[in-house]
Amino acid sequence: MLVDFGLVAMDQILNQMAKSHYMSGGAVKVPMTLRAVYGAGTSSAATHSESLYSLFAHMPGIKVVIPSNPYDAKGLLIESIRGDDPVLFMEHRLLYPMEGVVPEEAYTVPFGMANLVREGYDVTVVATGLMVGKAVEAADELSPKCSVEVIDPRTIVPLDEETILRSLSKTGRLVIVDEDYERCGFSAEVAAIAAEKGFQHLDAPVVRVATPNVPIPYSPVLEKHLLPSKEKIVKAISQLVG
Image 1 (cartoon, rainbow, N blue to C red):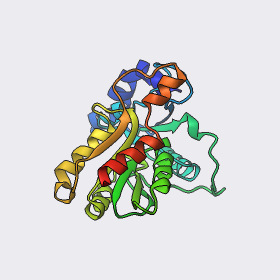
Image 2: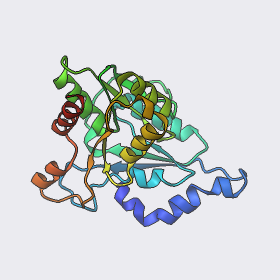
Image 3: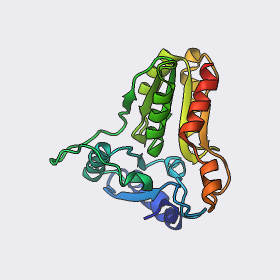
């Protein structure tokens, strides 16, 4: 389903699916995985182009998974299905054509374990889903004059805060790239973690590259202008590092 359509079932997802285990004192398990297509980039307009994972991550009791590549997609999906907890498994529509090496045998990728996609020492970039690839492209363009570390959280609930903070302690600068809306979004959560738990490591303000708080337009030109891009990431990093 499109994650936009999940809004029609918010009571079932957030009041029943997410809370039944807690409200039953652990007697009821909800081993349920919801696969949801998300993301813009196909001119599908405001009600078929949203990300919304931050909305679901806000509520306790449900895990939120956002793979960025084929290997992680298979491993995280198997981990989701084998677990006893409810999971929202987010799949960006533009990643479906992506190819990569995927073992035929079953394997799992643990929740709450971020992937250090690229090592660097000047700035940390935390990006999810489709944005991981764009962050790597930006890092490639800025190399070698700027060394960019790219982190893919893989899951935003649970979130691997330790890996993010460890990287921040090394680089002293943080850019968060998030296709979800900027206000109260995942980028805001990571920025808050940096401020509360890693403030002593910050050499500059945290920078967010996210979707502005307006509906996703139907026009391809306006949609492209609105969304995070490699160019916007390059600009943000360049201004931050100086």
